[in-house]
Length: 359
Image (cartoon, rainbow, N blue to C red; front, side, top):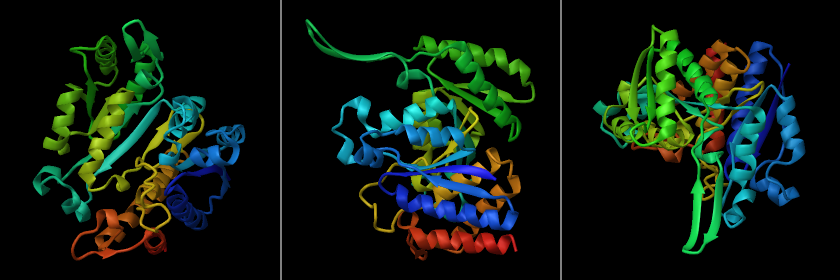
């Protein structure tokens, strides 16, 4: 039996997470592998209920579980809280730190059925299939930061701080991911300006001798942003530091036609965390409009990475693909000639396809 901590969170989280849970329940029925789901509060919902974005009981549940399924965190009603009390900084970052999740994997794939939903030309995005490996517990988000008054006025600073050990562990992981794919690794940095990036690049150069079968290229982050929209099919695996990875992965989300299509896995410790990369989308919360596919695909990653259920993960992904091929769409990916459905119906359609595949 695998214990899964379920953290719906805020906004559309309570709508999309149940659809992924239902998919996992069906996988459990088909495979005979038992999942125990236990729900807990996190983010703004936790602040409203008990005054803390990450209650101790939620953290303890996550530490005791085999995997964590997270919906979304944050919303405008908590934006005016002090920085250290906001849902994103007081829940998500500490949760990653406490679980030792130093690596975030974000696969970006342009489905043939959705290729026209991309704002880029068909010939540009066709064949796009890559993974961004983002360092998750270092850099600007965790380095020394301060806001202070000075004789000349107020100032603030954030520090991009990395140790060689932190760089080595994320780069090792990226090489291993690339070795299992098309064996091409792009390391993204800003070594022409940043000292931390020079250490990053030197470390990649040292480690590449251990993976001679993987082709390595270095790319400045600004050039990488341009190449992602100019020739995205060029990439296989990208590895980069925290802030660059945050920005580039959201940029890459546009390639697929909707940020609602991209899953993610945060790895490194005993317990991994799986979540869609989109936000809480408060403008559509409670309206049955949210796209649950990124959350369902995150559950597929959970099956693969946390439970070693490779075939089950493939079946879930195939079920999603079949639903799209049949022309069903949530509003964010709708196009002329397609059938627009809500959150719950989309989840139901995926389960029906999964049932047929596994029959």
